[in-house]
Length: 97
Image (cartoon, rainbow, N blue to C red; front, side, top):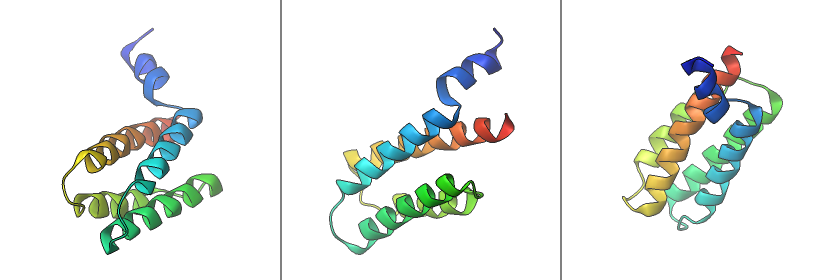
């Protein structure tokens, strides 16, 4: 198997995208109740709707990236960033296939 297939098996596919979106939703639920946290939770919900409807997710991903960047630093922010990065890759691979 070539390198592309290995990456696709590890990060790509609709199931992987759904799992990562579910992880994002769970992590967003751990945030506090301030304005920025609410914006992140709303962004995660909007991303989920776009994924379920098959719409383009690029705008939701950009908005969510910006909102996660506005969170105070901490473990949850780090987990959100890493999961969001993996989701970018998974969605790009899913769209390419």
